[in-house]
Length: 387
Image (cartoon, rainbow, N blue to C red; front, side, top):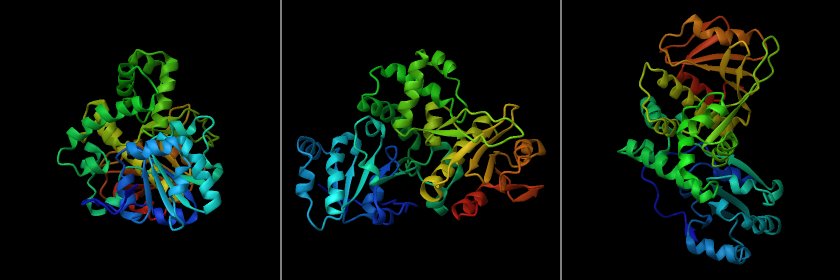
C-alpha cells in the first residue's frame, strides 16, 4: 500500500479537477492516457487516501489471489480509497461494489485504458461510480506558464511540456509507450502492422476518415482498421467527434471526425513540426483547440461536443452543446472567405454564438460573427461565458 504524501512534484500544476469535491458526492473512475498527471494529482490533492497501486507486483498478486483481502485491510477510518490502474484487475470491482454498499466507502479508480473495463461481464458498479476523463494540461491550468508555440510543438503532457528535451521524450512516448501499451492490453499480436497503422492514423487526425484508404496505406484489412481504431479509443489515445445533425436548410453529413488526445503526440507520430504559416500549423492549432474544448466539456460543462459539415461542403470545426459554433483559423488576418461556413450555419438560426477563433490581436465583430484572439476565447470559455 502506497502513501500519497511521498515525493511531491516540484513543478506541480494545480488542475481543474477537484477530486475531493467529486468524491464527496460519489465514487469515481478517473480515466486518462499515461502521463496526463493522474498520479501527481492524487499525491497533491488526496494526501490521506489509502492507495493500492496495481502496477506494484506485490499488491497485484495479493489482490488477484484474494480480492476480498481489500475489505479485510480497510479500517473504519479508510473513507477514501484509491485503486491505481484498475484495468489490470477488473474482477476487483466486485469487492469494490460490496464495500461501497456495506461501508459507504468512496473509491477513486484510476486507469489508462477502458478496454478491459468495457468487456462483457465486468462489474462497472451499477451506476455507483461516475466516470471522469483526465486530459493533458490546459490553458487555464498553466496560466502564465502557457506558451502556444511550446504547446503546438511538443504538446501538453506535463512531463513533456516541462522537459529539457521534449523532442526526445516525445519520441520515447510515441515509439515505446503507445505500442507497448497495446501489447500489454493484449489487443493485437501484430505489432509491425499496428505500428504502420498508427502512423497512417495520425495523418487522419481531425478528418472524416476514409477507412479503405487507411487499410491500403497500412497494408492491413479494412476490418482490422476498424478494430485498431477501437483500440485507440479504448486506450483513450483517440477521441471521436460526432456530427451535429440539426441543420435543416443544408443537409448535414453524419460521419464523425477523430482527434488524437495530444497535439504533440500527433505531430510526433506524423514525423513533422508545426511551423507558423504552414497547413500543418493550422491543423495543430485546431487539434489544440479540440483539446481545450474536450477538457472544458469533461471538467466543467458536461455538454456534448460535435462538428458540422454539410453535403455541399460547408464545415464548422466545433459545436459546443446546442448553442455555440466555433470555427478555427490559424491566421492573423481573417478574411470574409474564412467566415463563409459560419455564415451558412448562422442561416439555420439555431445557435446563440458564432465564433471564429484566430491569431488576430484584437476582437472584432462581422455581422453576427465574433472574431476572437484565441487567448480571449479560452479565458471566456473557462469562465463559462458560452452556455
